[in-house]
Amino acid sequence: MATKHIKVTINGRVQEVLVDSTWTLLETLRDHLGLTGTPEGCSNGNCGACTVLMDGTTACSCLVLAAEADGREVTTVEGLEVGGRLSPVQDAFVKEGGLQCGFCTPGFLVSTTFLLDSNPKPSEEEIRLNLAGNLCRCTGYDKIVRAVQRAAGT
Amino acid sequence: MPNFDYAAPATLAEAAELMGSSGTVRALAGGTDLIDQLKSNRRNADLVVDLKRVPELQRLEVDAEGLHIGAARCCSDVHHDATVNALYQGLADSTGLIGSVQIQNRAAIGGNVCNAAPSADTTPNLLTHEAIAVIRGESGTRNVDLVDFFLGPGQTVLQQGEFLQELILPTPPENSASAYLRFIPRNEMDIAVAGVSSFIHVDPSSRKVLKARIALASVAPTPVRARQAETVLEGGVASEELFSNAGAAAVESATPITDVRGSAEYRKELVNVLTQRTLNICMERIGISV
Image (cartoon, rainbow over all chains, first blue to last red):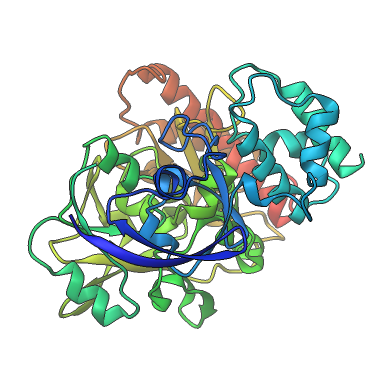
């Protein structure tokens, strides 16, 4: 097995990790760094449950090798909080009940954070299009959209 | 996943040397196809060479030759690029509808091309812009017209040790535009049942079609040019009737199969309709009503 030494900033903290060449970023976060807030859904980029920010843009962490994250900044759902409090996006999901079983929620929170960073006042159509890569198998989309609208103040 | 080694070269020379290593070597760009294929044992690898850190493979700039797109540049960057939106509109269309936002942020145009899926969304528009593939090997580069790059599903002209360095799209003339449309049963996140890209260059006063390029996805073992449709269009005067004739002619270039996503007959009808729609979008973009 080939191992690589990587240095990656995760949720603002620099971490040095010895990873196998074949590990994905997702399994490194979950199984080796204890960051289990990022769930494993489909494992092939369809469901978006494992969405994280890499250098500020969203990526499915199941389709990224850990070695690719060397020198990058990764933000997981655990890193969205602001000063120990829920971020406005997280708070809006709580207030609107934008979750049912909760499995998809970390991915939705990260994708919504990314959307509102680049487009602070999205239309409903833009919200649905931009969150199309996140699947909610409970089909709670209307409440999720309302949560995004609350976070956006629209 | 199979047990492979990983390398991330920082220069083109290092990349070429690593790609020339013995065993099964795979180029990694966005990884949205390759990592899934490795996980599901559809492709294997002894060495994965991550090309994203090579500056030449991240190019996105215009010079006298046209637009250079480094093979590892992600779809999102291309989708939001001002030059692409002004001059290569069909490429802005296609890079904005591959997978999801998360996928577009990682997936590279070069990867979409080299994966050589007949349904690849970026390829038809690249063909209508007559893209040139710059292929890098250990002994230098060679240029191949992208239309000659594909040999079959998942198969390209790339030889052992070679990789796609960049695509060059010649600068389109004034009074030209391109468009890409695909049909999927959902609104997003699906694979094209059929896809069509059109490029058209017209004389603004006479509306005569000076040049036309049509290319199709998901209706043959490789992306294909619809040359009969181009012949119908060139020299004609842009009109609903001409575009209708072009749609019918485009079907002649489609040799689809019937599968879970659609029947052969359905795909042919889609080619007809999408050809006409993309031609109309091109005219709207040029600013001439048909």
